[in-house]
Length: 167
Length: 167
DNA sequence: CTTGGAATGTCAACAACACTGACATAAAAT
DNA sequence: ATTTTATGTCAGTGTTGTTGACATTCCAAG
Image 1 (cartoon, helix red, strand yellow):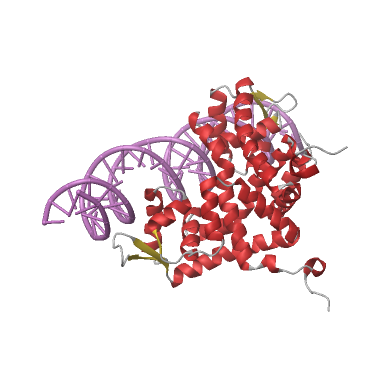
Image 2 (tube, protein in one colour):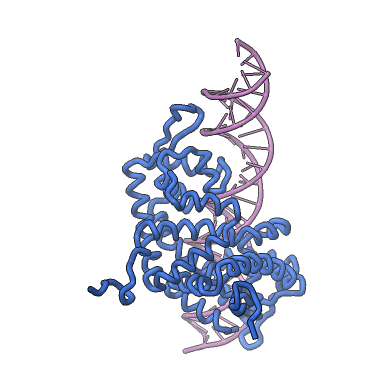
């Protein structure tokens, strides 16, 4: 007698409310760990998570415009502007007027900006590396699969474009 | 010629900085999806994420004390107190003086509190369920493994105790 | 029984980070 | 010439977190 269910004969015990709850709590506690190391570094510099996110994505896409950054970060321009202003004042980010379209501002990390970004991202990668190593490659593949399925649809598109090398 | 590396012959390409970066960004975008549905419901009730978290863990451990809740949530008592006060005023949470130790307050959800908690957690579970279903049971196992490895050590202990049915 | 300390609550002040709304400027697009 | 777009800025508001100080209650140890 064949088993019923999605995925061709797998049992569906992993979809019980109990299993889902464990996943939800794991997500909550893991995210704390995920941000813990950068948070400590940021605190020393009197910055917050918003600064980290800006540095990360500017580093990721050199010369990105403010509008691009806004759509990736999903915040208002007022909120982003406050963060960008401090980063520019502190000499971590440089804002250049666009050549083709002079309304646009293109954002670049300075030497100091790259240094802080490297410090933050190395701390975050170290934890991720340890987790990946402990869990193994097959677990990592599953980890990414579930996370991608969890994103909102429009965000997933951005993520996928970003994931597969697009400036 | 035997391959070198941890884990008995696996290649370590999943530990490159590039792979780690993808995991970091996946974590960032996925967490947005993770909180998106509850956030929308909370906004209608003029509550925030902190209220959700309190409701979740009170529901999870009926009669828990304020101190227990503090250590799980990892915030200051002042911050938690503000949230608890509104929940109690709004009749979603009941605070009872401890019988054995009358300094302690034991926290319970009222009927209304259970209703909102159920609404929030069902929304969150629905997204998690869809993601689990899309990714499959093996991916889910990996997802949980990596998340658990990512937690801070003391938090992981709490999570594991909580995970395996402890009131 | 008195005292010390733990658990809790409250007040005040402050900061980070998000939001809305309104307005200004410059430049591209029509 | 007018509209739209990209950006920046000012003002106000709300949630959530933080410290610090202080009061209350009450168990427990001396």
